[in-house]
Length: 274
Image (cartoon, rainbow, N blue to C red; front, side):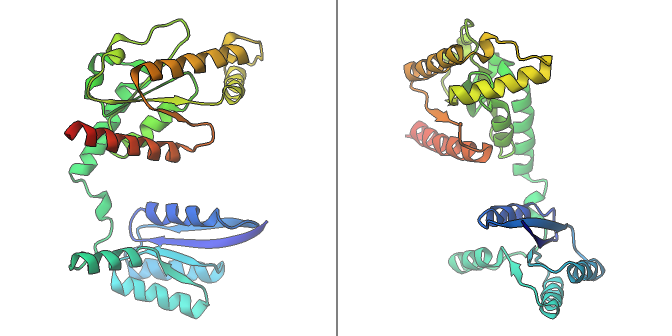
């Protein structure tokens, strides 16, 4: 594949421009993106270094820079080099400013300030780590979300992703022959969601895990296809009995799963308020 140099310039951590760049670049086949990330660019000297790097390896520039002088410096530098220079936030900020009839603050890194939302995310992460893999079930009622599912259905990484969004997420594994905790069966406030996965895919993942842990491919019920099918079916029956929604994560990324969970959570909260 042909290498495609892409310069990502930000006056903050660069998370926004990085995420948007990757979401866009996957739409182009036959290209091998070579990302050059330039973060915390807040002086003219630093910006000049960035422009010199773009000269050395020309490619489109995506940026999130709010300082007008630095923006002008970057745009002019890209004009001289002859490469596109795209501000990814301008259309959104402009549209919001028109709708709300106000002007933006134009201060870098505002989304990372240590405000109430920041501390909410930290609290959610602490809660999620303390309630991972069936721990501390005695206070499940403090959770926003409780994820359940058989082994290797991405419960933990999904919970961590949700915690980064400020959601207090717990997860409980469903183990063959082990009854679910009583606290789960009598839960009131949190939304419980079951995660499931295609049994054949689960077997592949579990076999890989067994090889990593034991350096062996010995057959066990943990990775036996019929046994796994039984696990998945029983988990679905449990969710059906309690009217808990189920999400099939077989072909979903963590982000896609989390987006579906957040949609369910919004409906759950709306129903609780009525």
